[in-house]
Length: 177
Image 1 (cartoon, rainbow, N blue to C red):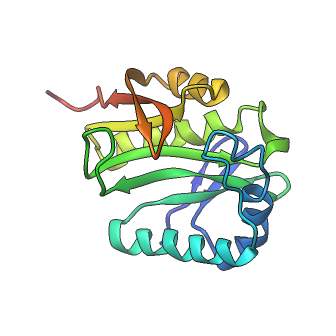
Image 2: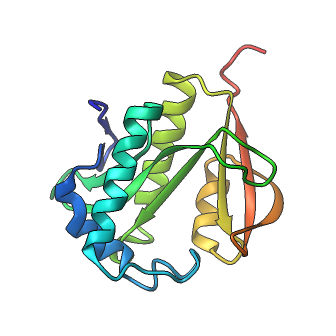
């Protein structure tokens, strides 16, 4: 996959196996997993499996989660992107969701909003997706604020693997009806 997206401060690029160490730093932090079911990673080998899974999504679906890297320092701070969800979720199947996850030391700096906005723009302007979806744990105040700031509308509350989540939708208003 050759796609690279630049924002003011971020470079969004495909995952490489060399990103495993940064991903382990991200996903082994219990605070990062507080609203994700409290299952932080315990081995860097789990990161290699995840990276291969994401890279397979690029081949299969033409899109997936991407590395979020700071332009100024080239530090990998997390991931963001679009994902084709093929299993039923909140009575939906075969839909695209926008998601993100950043290292704790980079929370509250606007990076997640910046990356997610870039993906919403890409989905609507380049791919011409009619609707995007997002979900967040009902108590994850930061993530819910980001999703709402991007213009998503909360549709309902549901359980994702036993985790209470809000379900959000955003229609592509640039498409002619």
